[in-house]
Length: 195
Image (cartoon, rainbow, N blue to C red; front, side, top):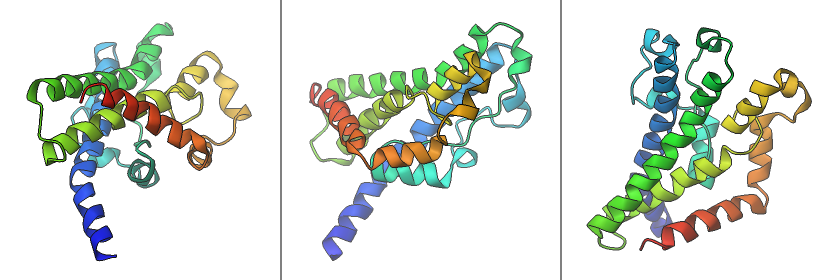
């Protein structure tokens, strides 16, 4: 029992920083692209930064700890400031996934260059970060809200939200099926290619 508690605590020492970094990059990517395309809402609210604390959603954060994917509070974006073109809102929505993908690629290159000692803190942090960020890329393709995939569908079908199962509940229920294991297996397989 005591050994399990110690093991969990030591795991959290690299998992929690990796989660905070992943959600910071994801939401900052949304915000910076929105600003470059004409919406400075996040900047006006002093959220155009990498501080993860205002972005933490309790349920979404617990999902990260249990299933290695979850969600954060959305960065505020006023799509009206982006004009009538749909590609600008699409770019803002897609930016979060792109940020996680690039972060995962960065850690893959770092892992290949540095060759950290297996089971060291550096190795565990990088390995977990690769899997976590790739999980976020995969999970955000799901066409459910509040995930980015659902936001893309809503962009082209404004009434979409009225016809779908509540997104957060859907993701939680989905996590109790084999989907969660499939996501973990796929991400871990990709990670295994580089060690």
